[in-house]
Length: 70
Image (cartoon, rainbow, N blue to C red; front, side, top):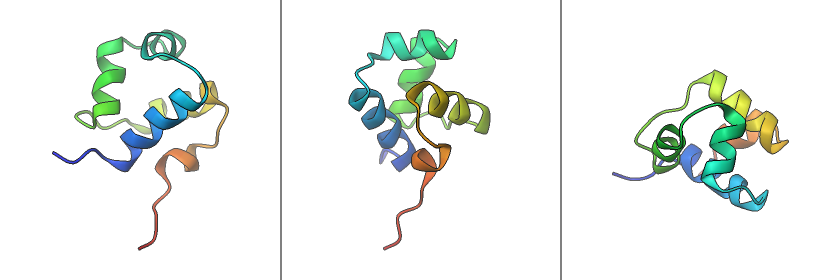
């Protein structure tokens, strides 16, 4: 299965900000299994978790869900 662009963006921003999966999961109040599934693209994040992730990473939610025009 191809990894979604949202999953790739979450992982990229997490690494850019210097967080491990454990650290980000703790800050979000979710298990590492949930965050890992989101980053692998096997679990679709809802609006609430997108907003939490963007707050913690200090970015706009649109940066995570932006659609790239082709």
